[in-house]
Image 1 (cartoon, rainbow, N blue to C red):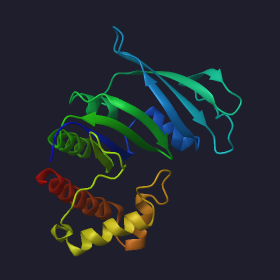
Image 2: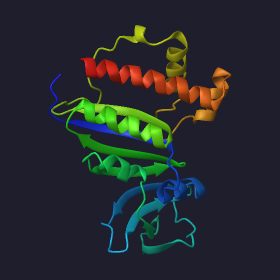
Image 3: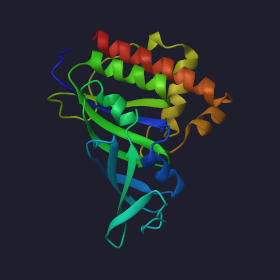
Image 4: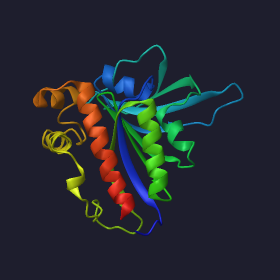
Length: 215
């Protein structure tokens, strides 16, 4: 495989204290067009985002954010926070600037570009150490036209249970945006705990990613 650049899309179900994700969860809003400033001398970061409620209108403003622009069918909001090791900053410590950020139902979606699969694996591994529900949604090599990369993966490396978990998650729309099912829904369908589901899914994704690296 030619390591000439990879576009990566991933999601995080429980991104800690991420305000963008929490607003999408609390307000039932789709959060898009997220922009961030560089930290000032006091380590404060300004973030802006556009949010549209489920009714297509504006959301209720929280005390920790201000509405800075209104379109009539949504609005632009701004808040200030201290610089912490949030999901985006964890990715960017690997010299991979986050290109796109959005959130839906408390789930954070990120897009970034990495120079090679080893960098992707390091980032995914680190995020799984910090957060729950980290899912690698797609990887597209530089020059690919189709959104799905054509890589043969040996599914025999998965255990029967791991394959069942992965297939059930796909069938129920766990990897779709917006989500067709959350981790609790899939775990209930499989009659296992959410933590067990997360363990099987993480193991399956790691094996599949290793297969891609091997290619």
